[in-house]
Length: 398
Image (cartoon, one colour):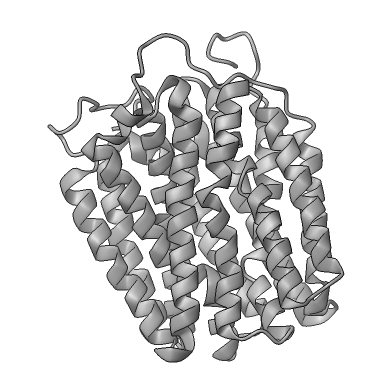
């Protein structure tokens, strides 16, 4: 039901978008570097091309978020950006030259980075005061990611060549576009209250600290998202192993989402975030030092539940708390731009530069060290008792 109790929650339509959005990501993120490597690109070129995807988040979510706040037609913009993503991606089916791949990736990612933060705002608008139920809708994105990454891992070892990857990704993007046609328009504006100016929100130390922590977390994830599959392949893992290891991490994320409502009802957002950062440092250290140990590597993948799942769920609720009313869309876009955009771009690009120069182990070790400034900032400034007027959020999370 809607907050007013008169409209049923379109659970499966909302979940369906997350499913296909992340199914496309599950086909792209783990295997696109392998596709580029098979096409003859070196590690620096791969790092640069993969950095284009988060780089456009510096502009794209903010522009589309501004349009959503001005028009209050978020669902229409989700549909438009989803279909334009698929249209731009088709260029990758016809030309594998570096210039064309770079241009198509840049255009495709500009549109692909738009629908998710817009849809997050739509989902939260449908949920109303029951924002803690967000994780039960969002978990279907994780299911889609697992279905895609595990299925492709098996397929690439058996019947399909890596050269077929662009066509498979395009199919998932088209499915994502079709699902958007089923979601009804929903206002994301919040009535009542004086939210003040966006600048007044951004001047708050707790908000700046939160955005800095979110950015550093994604810098640390950069080597993982860009080179984890290449790293595993170079250490003798086959496509099935790669798919299973990626799936294991996201399966742990799903398990967390199923219990996250209770976790956030027991612990402060700050406590969950600090634990996620610490576990992230441990995860990247294991990848640096123990990649040849399958059991320990699989155990480290379970920590994806913390490093991505918990940190993202906490971030969504903090954005919902800090950026109220007419600033909500801009807040979602700003979070996406600075974390997955700037942080992801820096992480992907520097890992490509350092991969051959310093070696994979040093790159993942650097990712582990990147977690410590994030930990310090979060400890002193993020959601700290006594520093914020907000204790328990309106959603009931502590």
